[in-house]
Image (cartoon, rainbow, N blue to C red; front, side, top):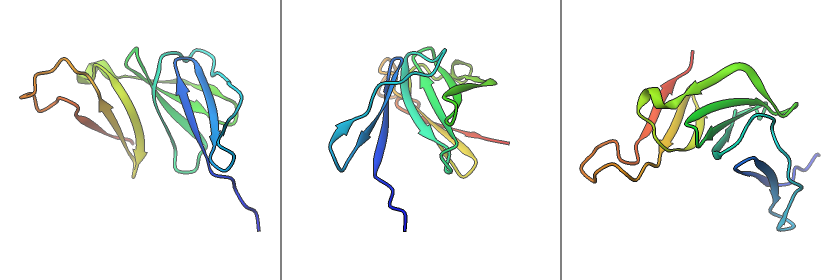
Amino acid sequence: MERRERQAHVGYDTSLRTYHYATNTLGQIFRVPNVSGITGMGFTPNGADLFVTTDAEKLHRVRWATKRLVSGWTFDLTRFGIWDGRAVELIGGRFYVLDGYDGRSDADPLKYAVYVFNVS
């Protein structure tokens, strides 16, 4: 029986690395070319692709095996009023993107909204 170690992947700005729970250690820093300003990350359910939100309010798709951007696959979040994308998850064929923008009034229903996008 194969035992998989529990680990998380963390990213900030241009740097990504693993965190290993069992040993409480960080892995070596690595980068994905042409990705900077990382603010949020989420994997596809099978782990084949990573989705990244950035401080440029873009959603990028990264082929995890090659650590390269998927050509032609960049999504502009500003078109939908997202001003500070902070997280992304792909669940049941939908993207959930959190907007962490602090500048909206407390009465604004979009303050800290989670936007839902259908994927075809």
